[in-house]
Image 1 (cartoon, rainbow, N blue to C red):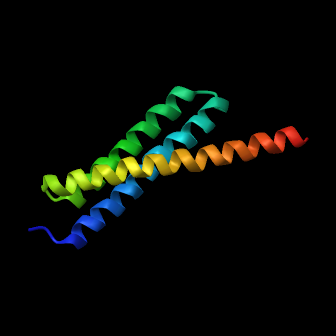
Image 2: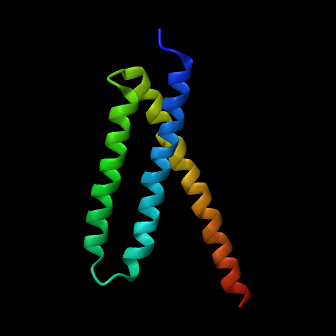
Length: 100
């Protein structure tokens, strides 16, 4: 039986990994639009984000498929958190531009 503390830790780490991955993607898109060489931004960001996430999954799951599932659920939850946060940031930015 796996301790619930490990499951909770796997979920929290999954949320953090999802936030890093999708938050990094959002920042990459924002930066690459104005960059002279956007392909380099996307390539470097993709490699870095994927490396961080895979390393995190490897160490937190420790070969246990149940922890992997919990960590993946946290990863998806992190995705939704980033979507919600970035949507509110964009809406505030649009409102500020309309006020000018």
